[in-house]
Length: 63
Image (cartoon, rainbow, N blue to C red):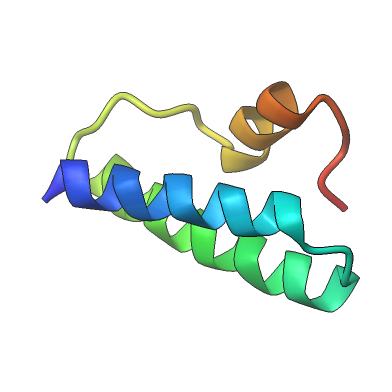
């Protein structure tokens, strides 16, 4: 299950990178946050805030 969630988050990041529409980007970031908390609740080693993972990968503020 954790592998599938990680895969879904990776797909979301690809789509987030591909969009230039702020509303769509925000919606996808919220979906990523929900998947992040699913990982957290299943005991996966993830950061406290999913934004820090996204910002580190992308090199900018996600908002």
